[in-house]
Image (cartoon, rainbow over all chains, first blue to last red; front, side, top):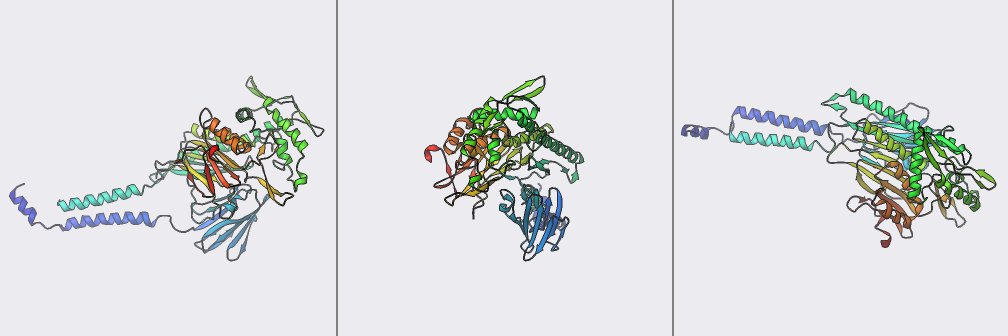
Length: 152
Length: 398
């Protein structure tokens, strides 16, 4: 590098306007990426639950709108502090207790053998599900995706 | 370009790269899943989950979606076919026709029934008769499998009757299977007179049928090129393929058979599994209780000791077998529960820890000092989930 060039570099300021514009564009890109990923993460509370008998949806409750609907006479609802949804099938019944304010759902009563559904932990995010195998009843959160765990 | 500019740019690019790598998380972003649930197969529920690249760069791959639908439908056909062959609920199933036939006669059966009976006989021999599908009459007499549930002790079968039933079930070793001209046959042992009634041998293959079905589904999935999957047949038999991630695998929890007790954990141990078949039996799946003369509640479960003709009362509450074929594992878990603690530990150490039937095994049991579990799985390869269950290494340490 010539002496003249060295002197020129020494006299230059640290950043030129064009440099700053490029920095700003890159910073904006990083910020956009950050916001896209973190703001769209599904870590919000449970948004609702659906209840199925076999593959037929019989009840749905949307926590966002605080509304529910029954689409089959085998599901009946008693409103109180919690919604008590009674599912009646030929072989028996299950009662699903839904707490709209706490955004949770749990099977609280059933007359099935084993009563595994009653002992399954309450649903409080999109990762959980409650099965009653003898009655073919399934309580499923909105956005449910099966995880990698199995209990035998 | 200035050196400072180059440095800052390099820093930002590194930051973006690191961020992109970290946000890749455990599950391979390219993989999604499809699942299908099958109801009422062998009176149970089965769930198939397959992981594949159903969407690439945001675009749905319809061929892969259609392929899953086809394979899921084939799975249903397979399961329904096995059910109609092996279940005693169907009058014309192979096993119902076998059960209805007189002692000493030969019955033509289908290939699947032949295969399942072959596995049943193999595990019968391996376990010295502790797995025995010929306990049909005892099972019915205690109110299971379509029998009437006793309301009190007076309705339980007498010792004489049970003695006759066990005499009949012990003849399972005399069953002869044959394959001639592409057809399959089972020659029934002679009948036995119990309480003045001539009873032909009858079978209940519930202890091996689900495992056999899980093996067949696994084969179907692999034949269709799937590597990443799980097929869960009522938590009794599960076939695991691989999980679509390098950092993570399937997580198996072994259910606490006394989880109904207040504050009890759901599982007593857990471990990672992939590319493995798992079967499990437990005394809390199908049971009832009666109160005896001393006012104590006694549990009667659907798993039977073939030598007494009674529901097991060995202290073992659950058993899980991992590896090999699910059909064999299904029968092995039943046998382990019937053996009782000491015999089960000897059997696992001698027959299942190395050799042709090498398996990873765990069982939970209760004795005077509380809940315990035994496993031949090396320490470090599992996690004990509950302080309520004490791990036992071998007989000498009990």
